Image (cartoon, rainbow, N blue to C red; front, side, top):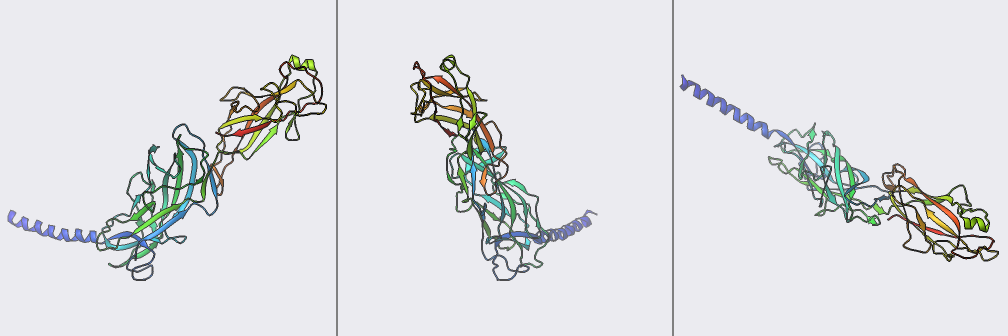
Length: 406
C-alpha cells in the first residue's frame, strides 16, 4: 500500500511548488526615480524612471530668527521647525513608481546626517553647523497618489529604515510601470543644545551631512528585472538664522516716574537726608523678551559723586551739594540685593527671567505664541555724599542702565 501513496505525495508537491514560485513573481513592487521616464511615455504606462530623482525642501520663503538660551547641560531648546516635504513638488524631480513582477521589497530611507554623541528621549541627536546645537527629524503623514502609510518615525534612529507603503493601483503588465507621484511627508525638526552652545552665535543654521545630500530613498532589492533608482533629498535651512536672547524694549515704571525716564525723589531738609531717607521704588520692565533668563545690569554716569557708590549732581547752576543718589537692585528669586556702583564694571546687579513665555522661540515668519515681559525692581535713595557738608539747591542725577543677557 505504501508503494501507491509515495507517488501521490510526490505529485502533490510538484504541483504546489510551481504555484508558490509564481505567486512571488506576481508581487506589485514600489521603486523610485526621476519624473522623466526611460521611454518618454506618460504616467499610466511607461518603462520606468530614466534616472535618479532630486528633491530640496526649503524651510520657508520668509525669514525666521530662532532664539536659543544658554544651557548648563544638554537640554531641549524648545524650538520646533515644521516642513512639508514633497519629492516631486516645487521643481523637485523624484517620484514613486509601481510595477508588477518584482519581489515586493520596501523602499528604504538611508540617513546621512552626522551623528552627535547624544540620545534624547530615546532618539538620536544629529549635528548642525553650530557647535553645541543638535537636532532630531521626525517624519509622519506619508502619502502619494494612490498610496497610503501609517509611518511615524525619527530619521536615523534605525538606518536604513524600511518604509511601510501601500499602493492601491499599479501597472497591469510585466515590464510596465505606473507613475504614482512624489512622496509627501510632514517633517518636524526639534533642536537641542548643550553647554558648548553660544547663545550669541549668529548665522544660518545648516543640518550637517556626510555627503552632498541628507538622505536617500531607494528600493535596494526590488526583484525581477525591475529598474531601481534613487531619490536624493536635501534640506535648505538658509532662511533660518540664529539671534541672541533679546527683549524688544525697556520701560521705566513706578508711581514716582514721569516723562518716561525720570524718577522723582522729592524735597528734603539736610537733617532728613542725614537721618536717612526711605528709598523711592521704581522698575525697569523689559518688554517682548525671547529666551531671556539671566539678566545683568550695570550703571554708568557722566557725573559721579565723591562716594563711589553714589550718582552725583549733574547740575551746575543753583546746585545742591554734599548729596548723591544710591541705586539698589532688589533681591529676586535667584540673587540678593545689590548696590550698583556707577562706572564700576565689576558692580553687577543680577536678575532672572521668572515670567514664562509662550513663544516658539521664532522671530519673524512662522512665529507663534508670545514673548514674556520681565520686571527688574530698584530703589533710588538720596544720601549724604561721604562726610561732605550738605548745601541746599536743585539736584539732578543721571544714570544709564546697561542691560545684557549672558
